[in-house]
Amino acid sequence: MYKIAVIPGDGTGPEVIREGLKVLEAASKKFGFKYESKAFDFSGERYLKTGKLVEDGDIEELRKYYAIYLGAVGHPDVKPGILETSVLLKLRFSLDQYINLRPVKLYDERFCPLKDKKPEDIDFVVVRENSEGLYKGMGEFQKKGTKEEVAIQISYNTRKGVERCIRYAFEYCRKRNKRKKLTLCGKTNVLTYAWDLWERTFHEVAKEYSDIATDYAHVDATTMWFVKNPEWFDVIVTDNMFGDIVTDLGAMVQGGMGIAAGGNINPKGVSMFEPIGGSAPKYTGKNVINPLAAICAGGMMLETLGEEKAAKAIEDAVIKVTREKLASLAAGKMGHSTSEVGDLVVKYLEENL
Image (cartoon, rainbow, N blue to C red):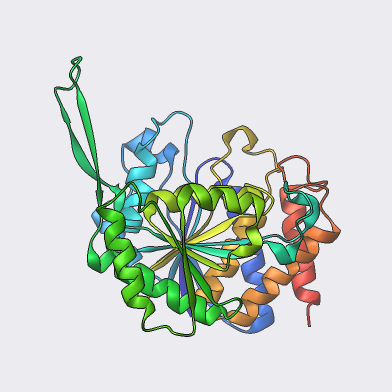
């Protein structure tokens, strides 16, 4: 019995999570696993009413769950940074979700903005360190408010944090078993302290994985190759900030935020899965948002829980819906409503033998 904590969140989050849970229920019946879910209201609306978001007691309760299924964070009436820090970052840091896993996979070439690229050209994964770097929140102001003001933001990297991320990437590359190539994405020519540590650690750990080919690319070159030659990549490992940037570019390459899912992974604890797009408040309640990213996130959750057949069946159903039923991946342009897309995934999932 998998205990799943559900955080619908803000904006269109509840709508896409509703469709994800619909698919999860169908998968459980088809593949014979059991789960129970409980909703947690960590939203902008709650914050505006009570001033409360994720508290220490909430973290302790969430530790009892197998996984967290998140819809979206972001409310137009809440100052930017509050929800992100007090929900997303608090959950990631408190639950030690030190890996952000982002598959980048093109399901239909019609939706790729790159010329002449096909599904076989765009199929890679970004492993992003998720608990350190510039997002650690370390730094200070000096002489704030004056003309001599200095703002210092520290990129905090530990050997332990860097090594466990790199080691996870090697293991994932081996398990993925495709091109078996791991690319370190960084900026060794300028960020000489942090990336000296990353590069040294990468090469040391690589000695234990003789079956995995390795290479290196500066982050600016990586963004260029994402556009020009995405077929060069298999698995990429990088730090928190660079990972945040390149995965959004990856989402566009695979067709947009409507199809992009991600996982915040603690390999020995509670992981959290989410569509990587925002809350899209302008579409709230209109039943037009694309739920496929949330559905794919649910599939990632099942794969992490060990229900690999169910996860594969969900992905196959999403691919079929994308290729056969959708006019676009963009909100309001799919040719179907949010709930209809969820129903189509369920239909194809149930038909999959």
